[in-house]
Image 1: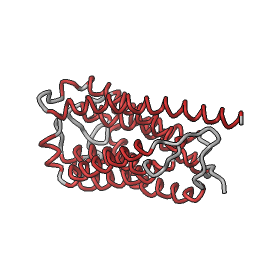
Image 2 (image 1 turned 90 degrees about the vertical axis):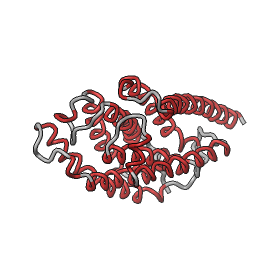
Image 3 (image 1 turned 180 degrees about the vertical axis):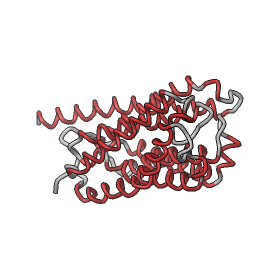
Length: 283
């Protein structure tokens, strides 16, 4: 048995990374110009900034996945990403009339067709990649590895379950999200925000089953990237936020805490992995 991903896995990851990079450029580069640049006009600017930050974290993940030599380093992310893509496809179909269907500027119309094709194909492509590779991991740790503490895994599981349940309510009942969210949402953007949240929660739940730090490393780095970029997005879109809404401050504090906690975990377990490897080699 080999833990190496199949050859097509790398190229799928590269293609997805390229698509995500294009979305990042459009959303973070022109959050106020989505009516001319993106698949549908999005207001206020905080929503495209949020989406662009999440897509940028996804770009980091798939760029790392393209060069990794071990499947288990990224395996936990694939079923949640397939779920995310399926939720985005459903949201697109429900709100299809909100999209630029050939009645906007050229870039926006091209973005609409790209968005539609990507979300029709990606749930099946990502799930297919996972199915092709799932038997390649025998659960063995790497030569330089560490065990993620059980407490950390339990917290990831609990946090993932709570976040997934909360986001599922927002997805099913977008009016709830519209009422409570710290910036203005529509039914479509409520379901988009909920889809990103469910994806992150599902990854946390999947990771909770694997004690190997090598299975957590890239995804922990992705959390750091995403949380830092979200903090920058919140600063850029500060005027769009309702500062009297407790969720505004919870989102700011939660993003900062996620970045700091993930960074501390990364540092501690990298040190533990190196120490364990040194002791093993000296034995």
